[in-house]
Length: 575
Ligand code: HEM
Ligand SMILES: [Cu+2]
Image (cartoon, rainbow, N blue to C red):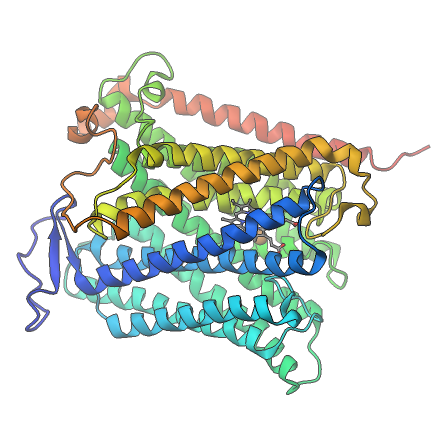
């Protein structure tokens, strides 16, 4: 940003409606600040409820304990899906959109009233969903609410309220961007992180519209207004919402990856055009991936499924791989430029591992890519999907993506929102240092335990493994890995929530005076060096280590992928 206007001259008669953040040296519109805080608090609150449900369902799936009865299991499974995948993610993303369209652009919030309306609808919708799932036994339909399972009308209504609220909030993102552009808050193209959030916002818009196409007819059907609705069409529209919704999470997560890398090691993207292109790939190709949720469905042809999953989807996967190379490479260049040049990985050894934003970033990238991405491509491939369809390998995959990946990244960013936006000092810093490791380590065990249990035939969403013919003794080990991982992850979750609430609720308001939370003290170099063009081009700073890591990743990818084809080949014996 070039020169900053000293005030928001366009906010008539409201001189106090902004402050200047001393650390970011950006203007923070107070409307935006309050909106970000409200959405972030709801996000953490729903994460807490979802986390309590997580512990209880995990201790039920761990057959040794088999804690809950069937009704409570399915009830809390439904609650967990709604609070985690929908409420926690979307509230946090809306906070991100408000941040991306105002603070990052040094601009004002142009439609605060509308944004509050969105927030209120989302809150009412989200809380109502919780209440009706807990207290009305008709609503144990899982968050997918597949027809012909019939929930009560209020259940669908709560979804609709939440979605309309989210849609309104997303609309204010676009309003802000247009107004900021008109008021010349940025020139040319917008900053990369805001661009990533815009990708998320565009995806969110058509995602939510497709969700309406599934939920509104289901709502009418549950009220008795229409007598039937084709379950195949419901599923098609539901995943037209459910799958791209994951890409909203993905785009938001990757924008946060860039932010965290900027905050903690001061990166400059090695090639911004390349990163922008990777976001654009999502816009065009990711929607096709929705078909991978329908691979077991009758009524759709083999060819349709194969085209929609096996081929075009890879262009979206390519987008992720472009980011997953570009970010570590930029981190390497930045750290080398700061003098950490020894060998291939000296930069990595000297990285700020105690800074929670950095460890959260690395954990997020590694588990997302190496576990989530690789297993996802296998599950999304028509033929080998048949090995794993609806087994525990599925939740194993998405707890690596949307939890170890996205949730960890969101948690990492939250630590910086506390001083910068909530304007509170971060308390329990030691906890914050350990938290990403405890949560990420637990989640890794949980995912691997789920994946390996799935390999042995344990099905997903099933209260009792013996029901599907699995002999309990054989899967004890993998289920124990899963269960121990779950307990660790829950401890990591409790640590996160505690740090956030203790910081936010206790202590006076203070202006932040530096960006790094922990490692700033011991490592002033990290904070002070600004990357020059010369540093970026210096031969000694080239990202050789990142190349090696990416190559190792591709090898692992190929091994896992072809092993699954080999396993498929062993399913039938030709005599
Ligand atoms: C401490 C953290 C967590 C633990 C221990 C945990 C554990 C579990 C367990 C045991 C299941 C049931 C698997 C099955 O029986 O099929 C499950 C399902 C699920 N989890 Fe988590 N989870 C955690 C965090 C999260 C988070 C943060 C998200 C989302 C951002 C999430 C999203 C989901 C979804 C979407 C399902 C599927 C629900 C369904 O099949 O209807 N989980 N989780
Ligand atoms: Cu999907």
